[in-house]
Image (cartoon, rainbow, N blue to C red; front, side):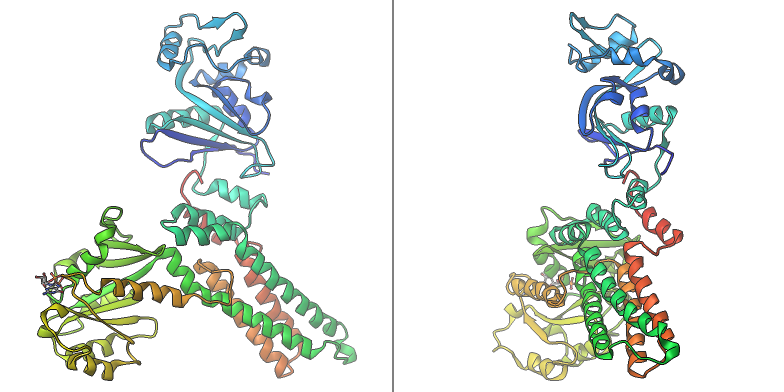
Length: 516
Ligand code: GDP
């Protein structure tokens, strides 16, 4: 059990109607009580909310207050609701309000009222951290937050490190590591898709799946161990057919989970889309057309990298990120030498490439050369023939037919005809993007992997299972099997946090925000 009581602001930085400061630890209630004027928090039932004031007093004096004095407070709401008046009364040491049957908070002249608050008390073990937790709701000023934190620290709490509350929830066995990570994902979720996958993970989706796999592996291990025990007598007890079936099943489940990562990643982080084409092909016009309905909710937001601008479009709950480096915006140099470095950079991280061309200003050879140079297995290339309003050709015309012939289906399999200016064909562009994500969905897996760490662990686990399969089929000694099986189990255990070392834990929780 952790002895420190930690405190941190749980709400966002900056001004808000309300802010919440949270305390967790063995002394959470005691420390809150030292700073609180209202009901005696040390005597209230768990999961209750109380009205009062946070005061900054001479902490020694506050600590020295006799318990009887505090328990005299029988009603926690003063007669006046005007906190300013209350503060003035206290600051000038004027006698406080008193009614015939009510005694109110009585700050003495060494105490300064910081704010009028509501305090919630949650007693162990039914709390987020499983420790005693107190939440103070105050008027959402960063200055007030700072003063309340100062006063809590003065009375024995310590400022929490990033993610320390969640870390405690994990350390105290309330949640596993995958669930802890899902809390960070929930906080970071920006749309329906990322919210849903994070929530599913928090509800134990991956945890359950992993424990099924672990059980399968353990069953298998016991079969092998049976054989090891009797190894010297040269008896082959384990039923090889049953073993092979179990292994096949394991491989199947692991592969399905691994494959779901591409989809999970698209849901969680969005899909990067690059619009590439010669200057004046209509790239900005197309982007504006796509963003048209989004403008109200999405404007340019700074990306994670400096000098990077992202325009985000949410389609069917998935974010599509049109990433542009600030410098690239001004560049118009895909003219003669197709495949300039900046276009390369843009394409490198993209999952979908919309190659825009204007027939009047391009040759089929240029388009073909470009697509052939940039295609890769994990990049979906869509040819977008823009400015079709300028011609009245039959569809597809000769230009498009040539592209079709040369590029389909090895390099790309989609050719759209649009007029970005007149906004025709824009829906088809959106459909292509939505379908891209839909096609990533693996029907085999109910659970979707969204976390790189889980993905890596699953892959290593699968690697070990493959080794075991090979060993079984080639009749290698069972001791080697046992070794690979342990590996596979440990990799799965890393996901739930059973086998994770301090460095990994530190790395995970340091990415949380303070107060979570
Ligand atoms: P970018 O350099 O690729 O970003 O091209 P812009 O989006 O700036 O467009 C270049 C020019 O082509 C502008 O004058 C646009 O109005 C025009 N344009 C873009 N799309 C179309 C279209 O579908 N039809 C016609 N006729 N003109 C277009």
